[in-house]
Image 1 (tube, one colour):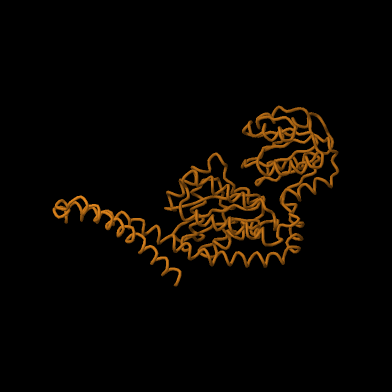
Image 2 (image 1 turned 135 degrees about the vertical axis):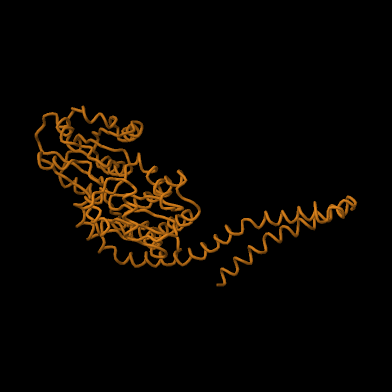
Length: 407
């Protein structure tokens, strides 16, 4: 476990509005991770960003402390000024070894989420890991860690009631939206076609909303969601000229800059002056702050859901205790598996070494003797050597595993 390290910035120590400044644009993410991986000699790394956390999960033997964290963030080159750097360094949580694994398992089981019991976090972690895995940023070590992460989360969701009557950021946002009593034929603009917007769209559709327009950077994804909702689809750029009016905006993109600027908002209004609704679940917000002061708006964001989240935590306290027992059990099971895997990796060369010895014996040391044997004797010798070769390969591995298990 000495290699697992995590630098975490979460809603528990940092205001969500500030947290958004740490989000890395998807277009530049892989290049930035490759750069810091090389610069700081980090063997494996993946990056996780959700509506209430930004985390860097690493397999590294180096010391991870506040000084390293500052150099690491600076190397990412995401435009953090000195004042904000101080806030982030003060609020950063650094985990290593068992604490790091415990944190990652708790996170995957939603115990560290703003909304305890929401299931969205596990798919988000898996997606973050898979994206980095495909780019060659992770390896065998984090593969084993992620296997335990997925196994543990599934056991917690199956064997406890932590997610019974599930509450999520999306469902809470819908509840807030429902309180505003929008009519079901309200004109709803969906900005972003990611998982969060797909989920909240399902809530709206389930409750008979039917008038949707979807905007997304990739048109094909906008079209896919629009088909599901029976609506229209446009590229994100079309926001600048869309003039059919709206009643509500649902937005959640990975942009690091506001998508809905004052100019775009005026165009979207198309001269309408009544109070509109914006549900902004993006971190950082997709909505320019000036809009909230210049126009009449019902504004729903992740930060405003905190109080409901606290009540949700109290309701699920008993389930937290059971979930933590499952997490502890999986941590204790992971350590022997990790040691066993290390032995397997270390002994990969055994078969090749034995084959080299075999070939040297037959073709060099005892070459003349073998040549002097008749065909039947050679076949018997070959069978004996093959048998011994297999045993010499398997016996050391079995013995090593037994030693690990017994110790």
